[in-house]
Length: 403
View (cartoon, rainbow, N blue to C red):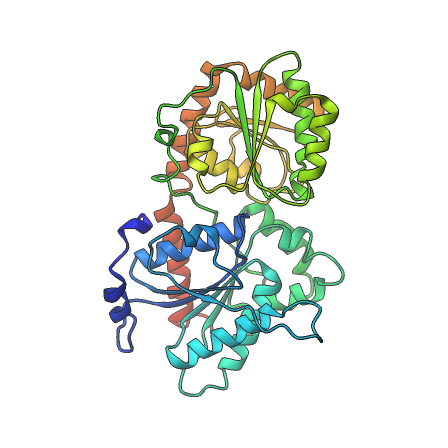
């Protein structure tokens, strides 16, 4: 169901009052970013609210996907107070207090943390404190793993013991891909003293918003590729640019880069070095992603780590095939030779060859784009995936597993 068809806010508020058995009271904690975890958490919140649940989202700023939606998700911005003793404002502790205030006044059935640190820690503290409130049952705690919270951040010795602890203390743990679930078990499940249960629930896409018709009839006279990311080092945008130049040397093919982040300066430097400034466009952060993805011939992704690849899925829903590195869970999203082409992660020439192969064969690209759209509509349909989260919540709230 699209967020635009959400129930009237007043009706939803009535449904969330004490004594109503059908809706769940759900708190979601996420980063307010353009990255995958913030996008999925926001879209999940909107979808759950559209299904009639009472949904609260906690963060230190309003996530972009939520900000532009009319859906009746209740937003709680918790930034904490600046104080000379703190190097940075401890917004994660402010979020805990915000959750406790809400739980004491209205109650929460489920607390869902997206990205392990710091959000699973915040959820754990809030749940632990809620146990001392004898007037209300403490909320069930769900932690969703999105990728770098396990493979990079959580795996660092500075955080690994804490990551393992909050995973063990969660009432349920989900991962966005089978690859991420496997890596989590291999890294953190030794010494758990019991089974390491991880439910694999993939990311999803709004196939009504991300649709081929978003192109609005726009076409590119020259072969065009598009990339969307947060320009973190793991996305390897400078490496991608070298692959693009190698694949398109001597042509007028163009590349549009959407997003911003720490590697943008390095990416611009590579563009100057390679002399392709007239063929590469830096757009920065944009909300009009469907309109940018749908007209492109190919979506490109060159990550060194990618537990799912949400931007690739959104491109697929727009009917745009994908050329990507075969890392992590990407092969669970992109069917090599069907909805796109995959290359070994450290093979620049192989990546360039696959990009050249698809970028300059518009007929094949269109066929793969149609297949990509069909996969997005079926395997990663919003309704089916959200229903799996809903079933998980119901299972926990009904007391199958008590903490």
